[in-house]
Image 1: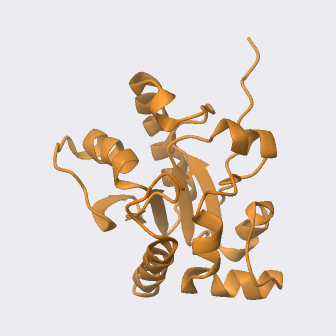
Image 2: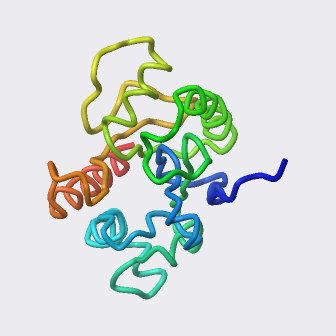
Length: 185
């Protein structure tokens, strides 16, 4: 049976941050890049943040775009997902498939040991939190009390344009907070 198209993991040893999504969108897979939809606030928010300053300087750009996802590996940033199958909406992913992906994510983080695994969105991260701790408590944004080896967990708002609770400026503020947390490690 052929494997469904997906985005490759962009992860290796010695990364500062690996951004972890629930699963790739069909659109991002079609485009071949993480967070490819123009309405997604990841790239604008990340580009305006202190977190990306050194990467923008190294790449010689004022703003990062989906086309920079692979180049960011050389700047200390990577990308992966809990589950690799692309869907139109994360809610289309069956719970069993998500849970299966957690074991694979655990293995990736243990193998590559980035300093921080940054999850996008409390709602998606809550499933990870529950599976790893058994707690039904709803996690909050920011640094988490969970780690895999040396990898600390951090949660920022979901950058989807559908997440009206947070403005683009809020998204940038959370990447700045991640920068501060990373600087303190």
